[in-house]
Image 1 (cartoon, helix red, strand yellow):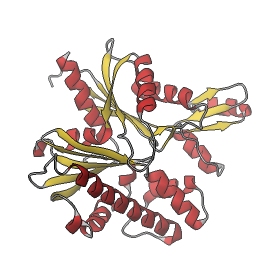
Image 2 (image 1 turned 30 degrees about the vertical axis):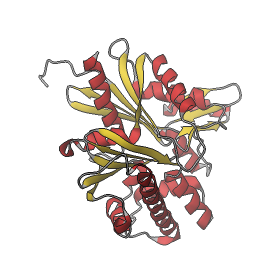
Image 3 (image 1 turned 60 degrees about the vertical axis):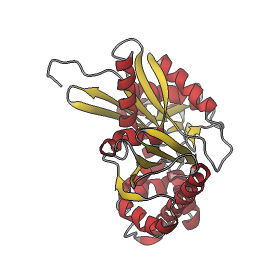
Image 4 (image 1 turned 90 degrees about the vertical axis):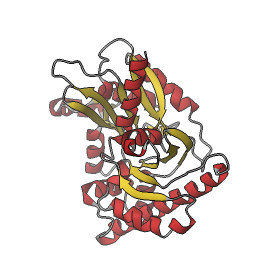
Length: 336
């Protein structure tokens, strides 16, 4: 891009249970903005100190609500569980403040559009195959929120976004698994044509909850342990060992469902050549995940329904979906 040339318009927004990530082009390249998708309610007396510390918060008559990274940090300090406006990848029906919190979080991450009705592609999970949950309401609410921020909103499949961002050298052919906090999204494409997409209602939160229950700890502590440096190949102590065991179970669970779902479409969609398997998502950022995944997969390879050429981590696991959504947004702006 020439120095004086304006960057292409369009924004990609990855809406995850743990993180919101927006991606847009600048003169320096692709820039991403991230914010934790969590909140915590505190006593109104905390207002003065929060103002001094410049923490993002929402005022209510009977409470102060902290949003973003500060909410998770504060929850860990006081031994509480941070609250989530999303649950298992979809809007949490049990959180009364969820919509207000999501509106503020999305606005903070997106910022103002650079021109009226700039296109924003936002991620929507595929329908889960192991839970009776509908994505229609979720998609509709986020369409409204993004439009209220001044953008022209388009929903996009999260795992397909990874394929768009990571498999250009393979003519956009591959199998992508996005390991999120609330669920795992899976998509299969050949030459950019989607053949299969679905999700499973397990993810990083499921790992944290299971490991916490196994060792008598809290989900917030398990999440903190993961992010401070869990090495899946060399877990230390009971807590890390429990996390590694649940990671193994989650990977096995995803592979099982890929096999089952492909068997339902194998007469209608062929995989004519070996394709890459790309892993991504915040839950996949634990140290050693790529090798750990490979070891689990090798035990299942003989029964896998098509050939995998290689297993590789996305170039930027946390930001890959938002970057893939950005590709679609820029393409939409060009067509307009």
